[in-house]
Length: 156
Image (cartoon, rainbow, N blue to C red; front, side):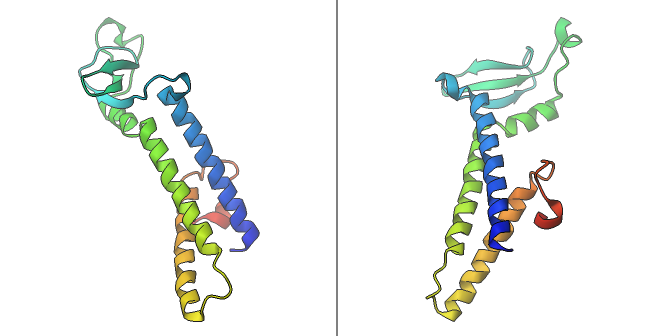
């Protein structure tokens, strides 16, 4: 892929990662200085939406089910959906953002290979750089529904 095109893809991916981080940080209440909470699904909870739950070792947001009088007025996700939401809690989204940034760093290091490197080593490094690039395209494809994503040029 031409250098200019790779910069466009990298900029696109960096912007999406920054958006994911911003949303995840807002969801953890990190901006308010309160302690971060992990999200958990709780089939036996009564409540409307996420609620605070502090145990001895942890604080969490419970993605609660609605039972009783208010259940019809405030429909909440089924347990399977609660588990899915809890699995993608903000801490996991932030960890995924860090992992994607490491992919970008690996590719950028591999792309800066000096011309003085021996041909045999250069071939090995080219393979590594191409593998890193494939991982970048895979990571960018996660955002294929974004209007700036170019499936004709960037699809893995």
